[in-house]
Image 1 (tube, rainbow, N blue to C red):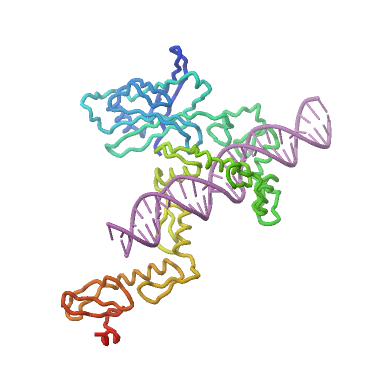
Image 2 (cartoon, rainbow, N blue to C red):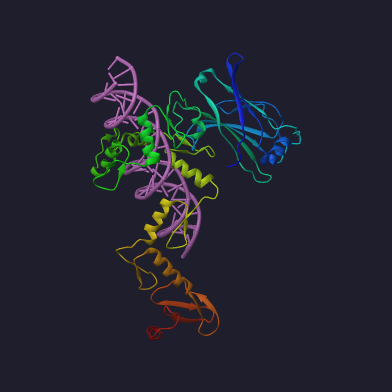
Length: 384
DNA sequence: CACGCGTACGCCCTCTGCTGGTTTCTC
DNA sequence: AGAGAAACCAGCAGAGGGCGTACGCGTG
């Protein structure tokens, strides 16, 4: 991820039916001096008007391209309107004129129906660029949900001290009641878990969590789906399951707009497709690197697990209880398949290995019958 | 009756791992 | 070129963490 680009914004009703959200880039960080120079070269300092939600752009200056995307941020889970300011590294149009300033104002048209929307300049990202490549600025606005600020530190300052008098001594959290504070401290600091499972080692902070846990032992599934035979052990899983019937994909990758049914799936996608220095998982039994941990499990089961029914090598009589061992064994056969003519120094490949192989040595126009070790066998000599 | 406290319920989240379809690789 | 195998990938569900809130009960 690149540096953040600070934005200031204000919402001002004007021009009768329209509201305008004005964004101003305050400055670019010193380390982004190169970007400033690029922007100054290619972008006129003028306002753009973007029709929110439809991607209709007006007054796009030469050398710049704007697009509007809407989705849900994978990191903060806010509804997002994202304005991408794309700039070619080298301005191709001869009519483009260099300017002194980067673009400093964006105007976004917002209908009156959107009065309830609150914007915050929470996420702004600047993607790194390749030399001469495309540079993109992501001005991303978060549409706040009607939800608590939870544990996000950057929003915690907004919590009202008057309404949340019970402050935790070990962190910045504050709560309405002492009971909430007490529970929070058990979860985060004292790690006290008074509820113990009689079947396994699980323990929990709350009795309700133990009740839910017990269902994993009893198999009780009180939450049944109306549309299929699925039943869940808790309400949330049923709700999540219902997405499979509606076809809804509420999580959208803000980079490639791919959509996903679960946030975790999108997170993996973003890591694997758009992440940097993505770690890979190395098989402990062979040198294979696999992108996903779950697929390493598949690899281990398929190639390294013990097989009750042994598989015989197709080249010889050897049998193996592990597929990977068989694969490695077969490779030794393949490496051995080059043979020398017994009459001269010519070498040749066997087309296939069987218990007995017959090879036409076209070089010497004589038929050679070979065993697995590349020498003529007594049985073969009798056949000849 | 107001208040504090504990409990129960509910919601949403992350992490995890299995599954099956698709793509890529190897022979 | 084609078949089979392995890796890639998204879908999906299990399990558990964390917190908001409603409710009941005891107490002053």
